[in-house]
Length: 273
Image (cartoon, rainbow, N blue to C red; front, side, top):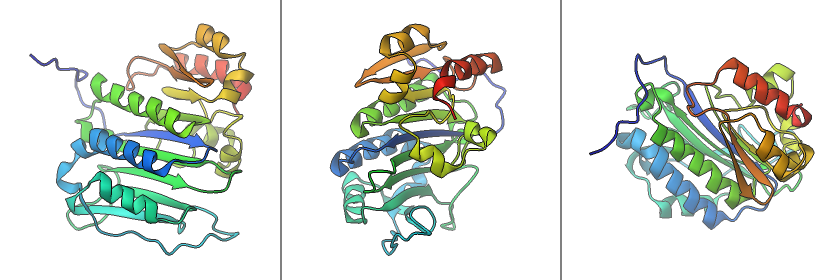
């Protein structure tokens, strides 16, 4: 007999869940393709299987410049409409893209237009510039979960963050609710630009989040692995090896009290902008 792990209703308004990993390491593309394929199949495809069917457009004509080193128009959009998403198709698309490029998977509506509020997207920014981090970003609307996100789904996102962190040797990362912009809530509040945040991603965390992945330099600045594991004011603290620690602030993604967030912010103060 299955157990219903969905949190009680009433259902709150739609929100978005965002997972991000930052890394300065070289990216193993075949391994990244396999990880991303599993993440896509396990976390995103079940949310809207009718629209996850075929790659219909891939832009490959972007050339980096001093004024547009990344981001629009420096990205390739893999738009999904009708057909079937497969790991071979994703692997082939990833391998065929220039090394300095953003790849985005976006859910489409019945007219073939990207959905915003009720959709999902997943993104990989692959760059060969050693001074600027690669990024992996996954976003899904909470409305797709029926308003509440079950513990089982939350554990799936945490598992993806852990495995992705090991794969790309991440210098930092996070999972949060309600923030879909390219800058985190902390970066906006502190007036920190995205370029500054990414260039400092190895040394400084990009804010306190429900799940906060600390990289080796951040952990060292906080006193080391033992100190962080024993002192972090979090529901769960996991030593992932390699100097990386994953902090889970509360048991439920939907329930993050202000006092808990303040305590984590104070703990992370030495590695925040």
